[in-house]
Length: 195
Image 1 (cartoon, rainbow, N blue to C red):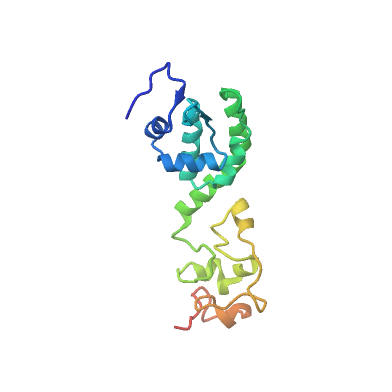
Image 2 (tube, rainbow, N blue to C red):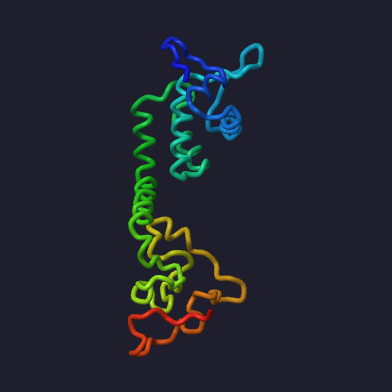
């Protein structure tokens, strides 16, 4: 990896790619989407200010944790373009993103910690599902893994019912049993599924 000398204030696209670890084609894409910007030389070559390295790093890490480019672009739009962003500029961006990042962290922790438990998806395939989601009653709250989704992720899973009204009764959804009460001999055990 090429270490950049302190006095270098503008980078070619190749230098930016090498130092950031992001492909030239990705940098061109980021620029076309308004995530980064460059100036053109008299020879029509791109030159990026050195602080673009921080923006590209921010984009790379944000994408790695699953943040969509549209949200990244909105965040970067809060930074000044006419000067190098200061610590205060980055602090404002960080504060603005705190809630979103906290939601994502909570969702990732839940995914890590609760995947071996009933997640409320309707499969009823884990023995704990019969207790946590008897007869797939969590399906009444909306689609998706109701016990795994948190915060805005749970709200985002809401969607329209499938054509024909109601929820589709898939092979593992509990089908016609949804409204039935468990008999005393079946209490605490998973509902019988059609195979």
